[in-house]
Image 1 (tube, helix red, strand yellow):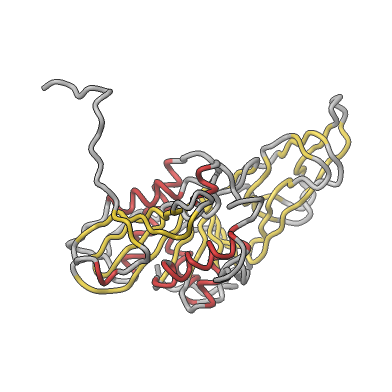
Image 2: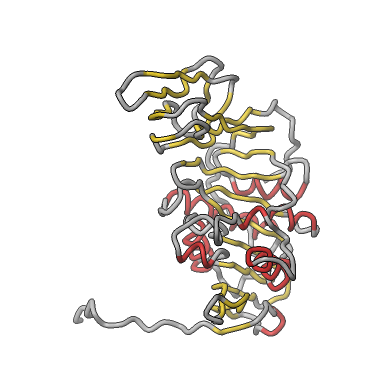
Length: 340
């Protein structure tokens, strides 16, 4: 058999253009590629959300995923691809919906923000008659995500920082806490959602939601991607959308009841010593700051016992640069767990 030419174009399934998510209009037992018209750009051309929708042969819940809400946070995209690649529509009850790229303008520009420095995840639920970012957020909620019964919002660290695989969830909300545990990340951070985040908006609408931070920006990390896909599979099984099966869960997550970022009080070249997920003790060396001539100007110590959730990897920083994201480990029994 001859090998295919490297220059031969690959035929792709065309995406269907839609103006809103209408699950009832999609046949049972089918998967769809959609481009949803959200708003117009400055040329009067549509900004379209790329979406994947799998509707099972039987009716049931609507499970949603969003990725690239920050345009340079990419690990969530292959997670979505893997979830859909492994779906068996004959077994699926209900519908799985994924917004593959939520922040399309930011994604095109390889940047975190939507436009003009606007963080899309600080203006939800938006406004019908607001500025560009407010309208964008409002229409994303109204046209798509409010149709979900559950949401997993997929993120990564931002530029110059790296993250462990960790979940942000309100661990005092029974369903959201259970979703976070089913994801089986390295760390779970108890975090009541802000009113202006996508997760906060969804929770206010009565839609249990968690945020999963999948490592680092602008790269793919296969092990984290695989782990996240398996966690989503466990949530689908728990919702009785897919049959349950035995999976190797791995070690239990470290659960934190609060966290904080530490910042520099001088400018210079920063080196952060602990690795991600390290358990550090009060007084341990955390980081050292040197000037451009190599002289040490400041050493930073761990202020209390903690686990390293994330940290800076960009050496150059002005006063107020991030050092590390430290989580305080919760006391045993602080958050009651359902059986997973």
